[in-house]
Amino acid sequence: MRNMLPPRIVVFATVLIGTLAIMPFAVVAWTRSSPSSGRPIHIVQDMDYQPRFDTQTVNPLFADDRAMRPQIPGVVAVGQSMDDVHFSEGVVDDAWAAAIPEMVPLTMETLKRGRERYNIFCSACHGYSGYGDGIVNQRAMAAMANADGPIYGTAWVQAKSLHDPEVRDQAVGQIYNTITHGIRNMAGYAAQIPPYDRWTIAAYVKALQKSQDATIQDVPPQERARIEP
Image (cartoon, rainbow, N blue to C red):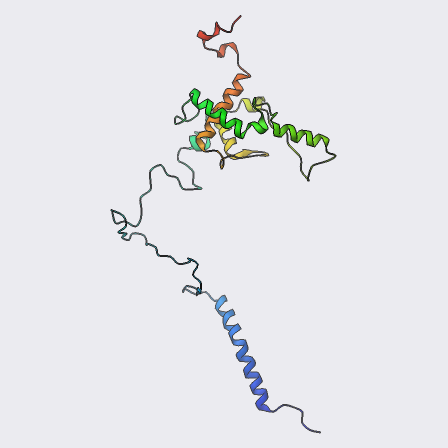
């Protein structure tokens, strides 16, 4: 019987070619798994590496030749807390602020601005009078009443009346904080309403609450004669 094994030269060539074919993959795997202090090879840069100034170096672009620029007064970086927590969070001495900040004057113009912003952002659910009877709430409650079960796997939560004692007794700082961050099912409006306008809304809400819970003693003496019998 003839020997059917291939010649040794063929076996050697096959093993050599197979080893050489595997080496690139082995090198790539070793390179990807080994830490390196050098920069990776970028065939397409895609703005990964851009010119920059190191700290404490000279930059002739500015008059003072400093690459490190001083902090601009009054500017707060995105995501950082403002120094004035009364204005930014409605807090004074770790308690809810009882008054609006000084930078928001308590004038009729402020209340008119607050009413305008309230009617735009809040009245849809809370209603123009603040009793939680806004048009969105009315339609949602009607839809839930006519449905056999939760609509689209969810349920509508009745909008809160701003005249409930739980809300009416809140400090103006807490109302501002609720407008900013939301509460329960209500989302916050920090992205839609600037801080100044949030304070005008909070001031208007307190005025709206007072309009439904005022007594004759709350009226200035010089004005009582016009309304007293």
